[in-house]
Length: 264
Image 1 (cartoon, rainbow, N blue to C red):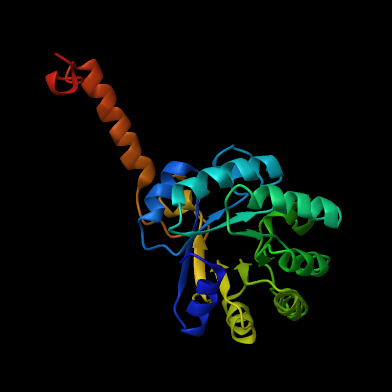
Image 2: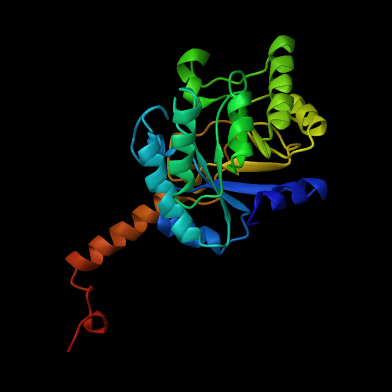
C-alpha cells in the first residue's frame, strides 16, 4: 500500500487493512519488507519512546523528527501517516497549516488528528491544500484529561449517536479514513457500514475495515501492559533480554569476540 487511494481500494474490495505504529528508521526498514499495509507514526511515541505517561508531551518538532526517520526507512514501499500532536491543530488555520507542513515535509504521506467537533473546517482546508487527513474518534488519547482516563467510549445511545455523526462529518470534510478506538463492536460495525471511507479499529471489534496496533504491544515488549484489545504476536521482552544476557555471558566468559570476529 503506497497511497490513500489504496486505502479506498481495499475498502471497496472488502479487503482488510493492516496498520502498525512505527517510530524509527530500523523498524521502518523491517516493516517495509513485511506484508503490513501502512505505518503510523503515532504521538504514542511520547509513551513508547520518551517514557511519558500520556501523549501530550509530543510536539510538532518531535513528530516531524520521528516521522522523517520512519519515512526514510520505509522508502517508497509503504504509506506512512503521522499524528498531528496535542493542540497543534486547535490554534487557527495558520498554526494548523504550519504544523501540517512541517510534518508533511518530513516525508510522510498523510496526517491524523483526533476528534470531530471543531475540526471539520480545518480538515476541509487541509484536504483542499493537498494534505490527506485521517480522523480519529472514540477514545482520543490527547483528550485523556477531558475523558477522565483511558476508558471505552460510546457506551450509551447519546454518545454512540455523537460518534456516528462525527464520523460522517469527517467524511464530508474530506477525511480519507477514520480510526475508531475503544468503542463497542456493534457501533464500529454500524459506522463502518455507514461510511464510504475505510475505518481502522483498535479495540473496536473485527468489523472495521482494518486494524492498528502499537508496535511495542504487538511485539510483547511492554510486560504488565495488556489492555483487552491487545494481542501480542512475539515475546519480545524476554527474547531480547535473553539475547542481551547471552552477549554478556560470552563477553565475560571469553567466547566473544572469537578469532572469527577479530582481525589478524
